[in-house]
Image 1: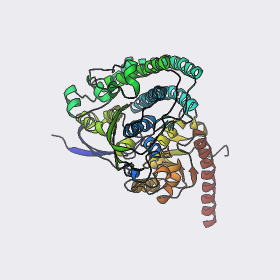
Image 2: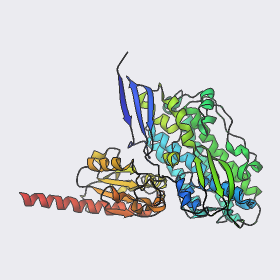
Image 3: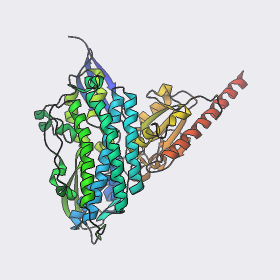
Image 4: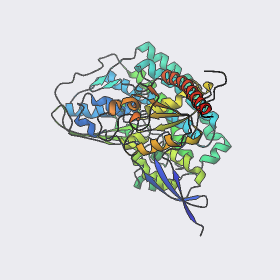
Length: 359
Length: 148
Ligand code: SF4
């Protein structure tokens, strides 16, 4: 038996935009075990509910993570609306779906770029981010922010998008679709890229289920599970079916994300055709009371918000379970037995977002 | 910025941020904003870096790492605090686990506010950093000459 060595990976590492530390136990070039240590981004946001009232906290919820920011804010709002027994107007729900799906498109493009960077394809990285910039332009035009939108509030949304603007957005998105189909083709058909993704970081359906994987990690292993199926915020009216791939390797998770790009565009199209004029928000009266679990599907998987309130301005407890946290055990399983050079690709394949995992 | 000033390399580290600013830092290095036209290259090795770009309000576990990255960088060096949480703690200021700003751990030269930071502000700050770096280098050279 050859000697075992421990290689520290992170917290500061070029492929990681955010700090996480892994101790990789290796034998020759093979990774036997990965031991994580986390806590570099923990800020204690859940405890902040004691200092910021339930209306103000939306801004903090949005800053749990800067990539799924809108969906974080929205999930928090859904929990509050349930506790306040508020009915969100239908136009606001459609607008929320549109912004959620725009977030998903930009997040998946970001992921494609980072993955390309992880296997050393710099050009593809830049191409993906180039398309992403155009999506950010749409977001900036409609909300005013590039990464933190600030357009969701308890009871509805802050801004409207006019009918002409919606048509314009659709036209733009359709032309961007051609662009992402083109780079998607490189990810899925290029021999070199396939070589780096196929058969790497295997996770079987059984493992994905028992370890509690979420999001594309779960759907890439053949499980048809997506919280959008539960129909929150009007997803039930849009005819949604999840994207599923069965191979369970990095390639199939990549394919799930590329197919979800098209799906998100489709959802936005449906929203635009179904939308009717109407009010944007319901008035907030009283204080939240009781407890509730809100669930939503972020680009990285399922997020759960648990809120407990006692009829005062401040919540008693807020608990957030985010997709990256749920995906850490499957990641460690996928890492065991891989080549050292594949570690960056496999770590990225769960689309790690450390700031939301640690809050 | 003289024609002969050095191309500054940056190292980026996330000191407990929400990720929003980090994504903007990366976006600025992409073709749209193209920070590389000022000769700026993103490096992963502190020993190659001239500019330390810090985001986030730095929590207790992260502080020694930030300090260690700073110490490993060769002189002269410039530290940029990016985003309102790196400059003052921002929205996380009242959290129990954060120190409240990059300047609690390392000396900061340039503050870049914004939540999230605007790419234009970042580019402006990077240009300032290049100027500052030149100044620091000139001062160090002058001090050395004096010794001789
Ligand atoms: S300044 Fe705002 S966007 Fe930037 S890291 Fe802090 S909270 Fe996030």
